[in-house]
Image (cartoon, rainbow, N blue to C red; front, top):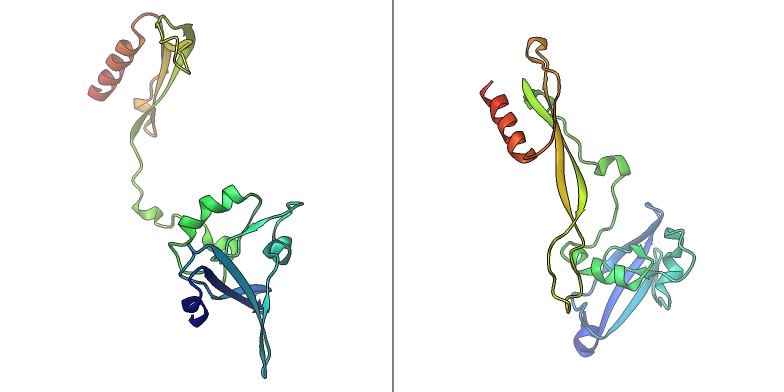
Length: 196
């Protein structure tokens, strides 16, 4: 844009009304987003004329897009509304990787769906396991100048393991163990299940 070439500290963004989608569309997004001053314009047009209007407060223009009661912060490349500057600042680097979003998909169209059910392979056998544990005081000497210290550590006290199968002759009752050397006993049990 000629204006941006002549003014090295200013970037310009232009949006316009989009009556088809009941909102706004991004007509021009400046590639010079790192500049110190940002100017946003609203392009009003009909069949005969075009007129640029300075957007003094993006929050007021797009504030109805959120239920937040207060000032909002708007992303120039997506026109999404955020409640804090911090959230907008963390959003901008990811948003700028993509071209400006003009039309958003319908909510049902943007869900990830798995349709290839014929490619699924059922498991004949699988193990469902659960561990029980408790917190015990830690016997660790920590540095007195450290900002954090270990108070407790988790000790495994038992496990339950259950073989699941759609073949009834291979089902077994759950194996439950509580006592010393829990992880060693669990490993032995899993290896015996593997051999079986």
